[in-house]
Length: 546
Ligand code: CO
Image (cartoon, rainbow, N blue to C red; front, side):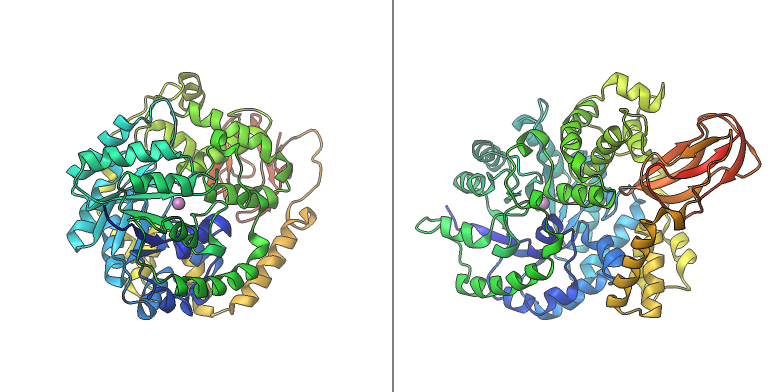
């Protein structure tokens, strides 16, 4: 029996779970050197939502975070969360982009790559595991933990063995919703330890209140590493606090070698930092919610859902959406609720509630999921729902051959006059619009405070519909209204041209999903009241058809 190793998630998962991923490199830079002296096994400090959040909300180059923090903290291995073929985005990227991303991350200073696929479909993990092994990084395979009639110990063991065959260095049980109970943690860890010859890590969230106890049972079953966060950024929907876990292991053979006095001092720093971001905390992500055991909502998903609903003035409907989520999940074959499937299931459930009719609005991502583009679900999709979503089309679970086509040069060409460094091409390949907007802001070097102010002004304008969307009532024409709040991503229809009933006229982006808005009638598209980029509220007029 040996001492348990401890990973610190404060710089990635903890703030992603509690304050919508808003910690900046500046917030971290003064403390990471102290953290480096504590004796952690690793820092989970990059990947997941931190990449696009940095560009989108912080006007910060995500790549700089690795190098800047590494300078201050050279000792403790840096760990990132890599979404397999989704890299750090929400769709599948070509193989060469996965390779380039892994190479650049490793060169910048990432040591350990925790690789997962939301469906535990190893087809989507092969290339990233191969890439990590090739550059010489530590490849950690991941089992996304969820509860359903099909997610048994045998299922997880089979998945783990598939990953071992791909030559992973360790395996992580990733319990993103905090669902694993102590005995299940014990049994799963025991089974993995007995059958595999690699280190096992348990990653859980405190959402249901069970995580510290489940960690303890996992430790008794021989788990090698546990994930914790610094006190002020722990519990709630985040990881168990490191101080708590340390104290729990006092007087046992598992007690870790952390410099706990130093941890207490570091906690004071993060306490002040949490003060700064307090307004982003929601009660729902702080209080233990026993219903979570039924709804299975991961920490990050809950905090995003709440902030999205707040933006749409729909927060009072949270309860209805929470009860809709397990229904949608069952119908979609019990996908684990982890990015991007947490967004996909969450968006569909939200639309089912807010639009007043189930599966009336179906984001393109949901269609693609049902077609099999994301991989194979653990259980079949409900046949009635499948029919509503893709009609008679048959799902296919083969990897798309398109992903094998080299694409890097194409991205490079498209963006080469806007880049400052090689990594910019990768940022662009992953998030074209966000990256371009970021390059522009970086070039103009708008100070961060000013940016926030401008964004706040923009939001204020957006909430005043008179300034954004024409409210005129067009006579006997049929007015197409926005069925949901969002941004007009694309206008497909053309004024003066005939349109068919149910043909796509607009694509509205809401909750990071693309929603096709179809014509309510056949006729001539008389007028379009919005332009691309406009923010619309539910009920705003989009177009008139007559
Ligand atoms: Co997590």
